[in-house]
Length: 221
Image 1 (cartoon, rainbow, N blue to C red):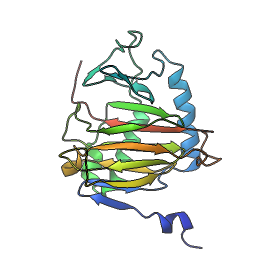
Image 2 (image 1 turned 90 degrees about the vertical axis):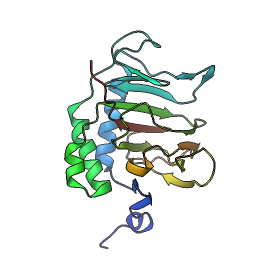
Image 3 (image 1 turned 180 degrees about the vertical axis):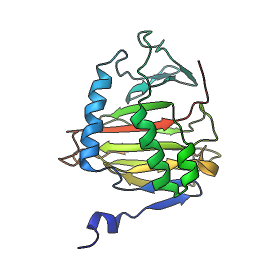
Image 4 (image 1 turned 60 degrees about the horizontal axis):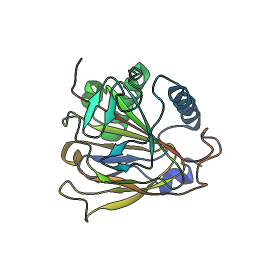
């Protein structure tokens, strides 16, 4: 068979101008390798933590690379965790981000220019969710690259004006790539549900979901 059933049933899509979904982009081997890196990062100088927005503690566990994110601000040190400097942004992730931009947009020049310097790495347990929000603490001229590994999630991608409709719900599965920028850069988006038991056996993650989002902060030391 020339194409797998997965490819035929889940084709690459542009949800709205600037928002691209590329299913099954990471191979099983690549997913396992990234999961191993995730465990290494978690044992590093800054452990995963649930960030607080006001008095509300998020249900996802987060760690950062390059720059530490806390609500509405980036810093090199995780002042809201233990004060340690976060791990550097890895060179291999810059290369992966450029490959992702090209896979999504087919724009070679944009891919070559893309130089992410921060990653927010979130772990979603069975009951974790992410409310509708905008990623607006970074340089808004650059795309956000999102990678999913593990259990499938119900991902809601909306409009740039508010959290309400119109929006579209899609199932982001292990290995999927999602990229948004341009007119979709400030679209509200969130995760409304994790589907337990949907992680492929060969992805390296037994349960839950890892989501890596690469960003360009526009900041310098």
